Image 1: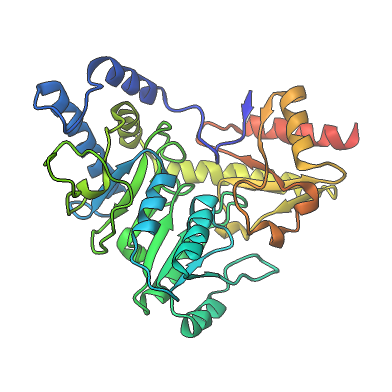
Image 2: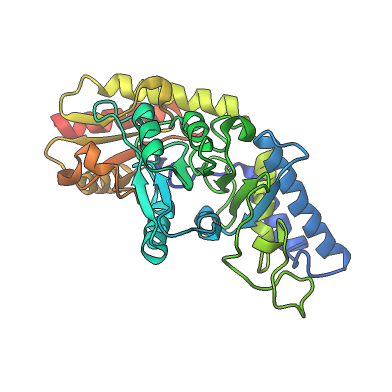
Length: 380
């Protein structure tokens, strides 16, 4: 199989990730924080080490807090639902948001009677219009601003530093969704003015499914949203009051955390970024002069990881099915869990897009094969 669906989850994982998970499953898959015996303490130490690596990854060495959850979706739910809203508050989101944010704020809008405001974009370039956004902030000051870092539809790198800097002038809480970016794009939490950085272990960090979470300096308190056992003070029905215990109920997935721990030890962000950049530029260069191929791509200096496209006279799902059944090429088709951006892409009649997403193990030869297959579909 030629695997070109790395935006959904990176595959394969490095061999040492599989090995670390197997070892954890066999030797210390115990309940961290719940036992005083040696093996349970080893599991706790592994979690602490993994959190330290994550803090260093975003420039927060010896600072900040990491909350481990089962996925980035759970983490975003905890953050967004944990904020104390007042009727009439404004929550800003970009049109590029994934349903892990879009559906959460939609529900909060209904339950809390707060307003959801969509960041304006330039309809020609599909970039966030910063000046119009600043004007919106004046008229409707933000309580909270949620922003994806890299679009999982087009690969657009959003100007999060500018967005969050403007939002902070109004004291807004800023939430960064790094599902596509952490491990691929350099992130400095302080420079970005991000109160919360939500992450997915199984994407650009090259860890497994079953582990995600969020990183924070701990300056913004959140109400507890998911509650349960923490292994401490069990006779007290109230959750612990501080980070991270207040937000980490239930048993930790120590096997998945072991895989993420191993992945973080050998993560060369610059090398992976350059590799993916070269592959995407090669793909775009070889498809741009084919009139039957429509690509939805941002400016090259703000683009990484993927290309969304459509082919004349084909539905996106049909292209995906042909690539799979006839050529053993895996891509993602449809609307990619992003409800807003497709009205700007004008791809509804095609049923969304065909998304081609690369990773650290994608080769140039595989991209060449993909290009040749598209040409075969068009001209044979």
